[in-house]
Amino acid sequence: MSDNDRAKELDVLLLQLEQQERDLSERRRKLHDRMAVFPDPARQAELQTQEAELSKERRELHRKIDEARVARNELRR
Image 1 (tube, rainbow, N blue to C red):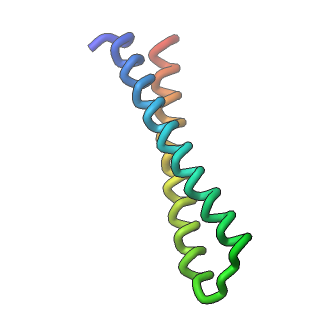
Image 2: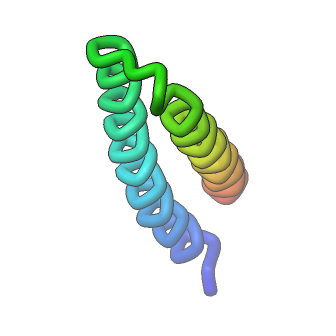
C-alpha cells in the first residue's frame, strides 16, 4: 500500500472518529443540560457516573483523532 493510499485511509478514519466525537459530545451536552435543568438528588450519583463514562470515551476519541492526524501528517511530508 502506498503512502498516498494510507493517507486516504487515515482521512476516512478521521472523518469517522470526528463524527463519533461530535455525537458523543452532543450526548454529553444533553446530559449536562438534564443535570442542570432537572436536578434529581436521587439520580445524581448515576448521572455523574454516566457523565464520567462519556467524558472518558470522549478523551479516548480525542487521543485516537490526534494519533490519526499525526500519522496522516507524517505520510504527507
